[in-house]
Image (tube, rainbow, N blue to C red; front, side, top):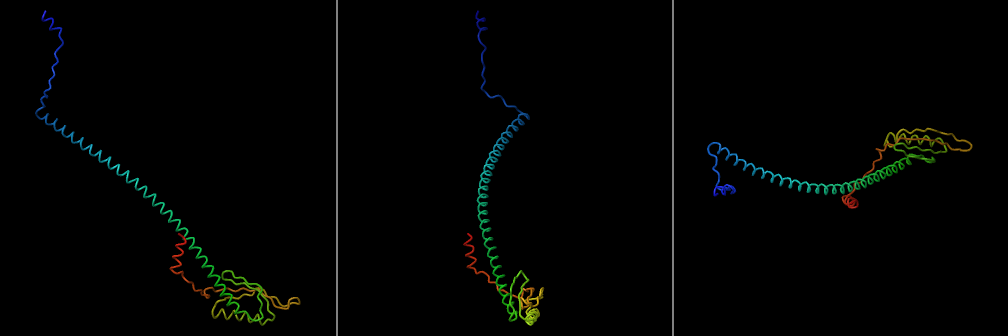
Length: 214
């Protein structure tokens, strides 16, 4: 009866908390070496991952800062480009005004010398200046005025050379309705002979120009 009761009892549970014996010999050395190397590899990999994460974070911050600086630089360049455009516009207008003043003064000198060549008694009816050509028409009472006119322009062509190549295109004799001679003529203007002294703007004028364009 006692044996039967023992057979019906549950099997005993044997828990061994003692560490198992390590492998010895060459195989054990290899296993220990692999485990140590694996630990170092894991540590190195984690260090590389952390360094990569830190580097990517720094690069992201640098990129954002660079984008901000680029935006600020673009705004600055845009404002300076607008100022430069305005400055060049004002400068071009000043050059145009100076050119017009030079041409006007040059034409004024041309007319002064032109009037000096006209004989007494000759009347000018029309006169126009286009670049280097002066076209005019008029009338005179006698043929002597015409000869004097031709001689005056011939002397100018040989001396100061301000007017070259006088050409009389039309010449009408006196009639009962018009007792005077009438003519149409043109002459070439040598603008190089009419020197105009150009004044350069002073430093104060340049400073005022820059302040006005800001």
